Length: 289
Ligand SMILES: Nc1ncnc2c1ncn2[C@@H]1O[C@H](COP(=O)(O)OP(=O)(O)OP(=O)(O)O)[C@@H](O)[C@H]1O
Ligand SMILES: [Mg+2]
Image (cartoon, rainbow, N blue to C red; front, side):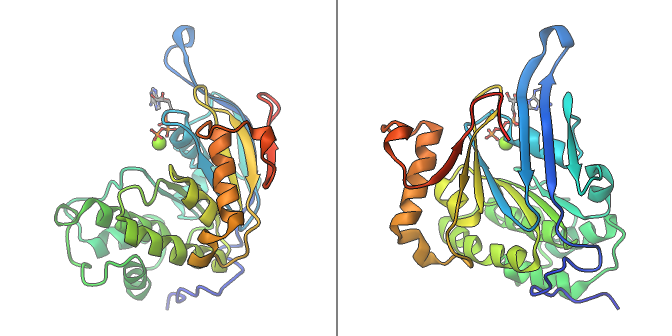
């Protein structure tokens, strides 16, 4: 019988613990070599095993491209991605890396349950109806197991995609604006509940979000990217206690971090040097970690 989903299992399950990820000197250009368009430039980053990292930056700066490279769905023009010293392709095929894209891309002829269950089938994992239904309930879709995507709202489709992402009990999760279309109330609930699931289990997570408070609430680190070509320009450490609660969002520390990331993104008026509440590693272009 397939092992039950155990949120307290810290070793990552039978397939090994959460992996570390090292990205070295990654650049990505699109188009013909002579008229190439540089989407990403000199990206170096390390994701610690079992950590959650958020990626924030202006639209078009290459966040999705970076996630696709990490998932092995796009090749870097230069540079290397090492996940536990292995390449990402084989891990994705076996469901050890799970990706939730900006657009949920569900199969329209399959129900919610069948879309979620398919992830296990494609990864050649044993079917596990109880796990699938548990995940559907956790994203607030109990009662919609038999519903097809066309009959769901955009936010419900996105939540199905999150459940599908968790269905293979991945070691590395790459989430591209996972809550973008989710309504504010549900989003707040998922912001508190889902990290518990992946924290307790020790998944390494990288998520893209346009919400700075969400980035701070969910993450151990927030990486700030610059506009084209995308580079990582700041690495902000979030030392708020875990598990994160709704209360933490009203603390001065939380607001200082949100403020600080706003400054790094260029949203706020004050010069970064005038504010020092947060632990920020501002990275000179071309010398990122
Ligand atoms: N397959 C492709 N061919 C050509 N250009 C591409 C391709 N994919 C992405 N780009 C370009 O690369 C740049 C980065 O795109 P990407 O989708 O990674 O941005 P993003 O940071 O995820 O933006 P958003 O926040 O709007 O989702 C954009 O200018 C985009 O037009
Ligand atoms: Mg994107």
